[in-house]
Amino acid sequence: MQKVGFTIKNCIVWDKVNMGIGWQYRFQHEFIIFAVKGKQRVRRVPFRNVTDIWRLPRILGNKTVHPTEKPVALMEKIILNSSEEGETVVDFFMGSGPVVEASRKLN
Image (cartoon, rainbow, N blue to C red):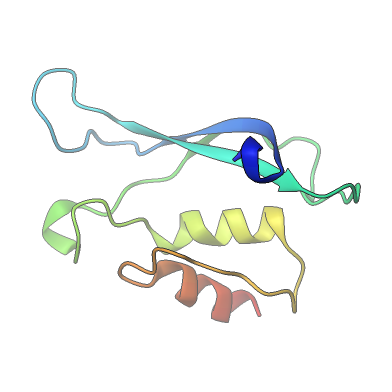
């Protein structure tokens, strides 16, 4: 990310509430890298009391299209904290579509 001009600002921990796939010490979290590009100093996170640990339940295995599917609520939080209404949101890994669903819901 840094080689192509991004500045890493933080690492957010998504606490999935329930453990995920695997064997022994099964992961209950994922990391989200928060990075910005460019010199513009725009404050995106709407509130000062937002922490770097987000507790949102993962989608249970029997309700997913893909084993690493992300919940729409997680994508909504990322979009709300990282963009403004009317801006373009890009999802390079499309997957099952939670980013599209969240983007449409939030305009």
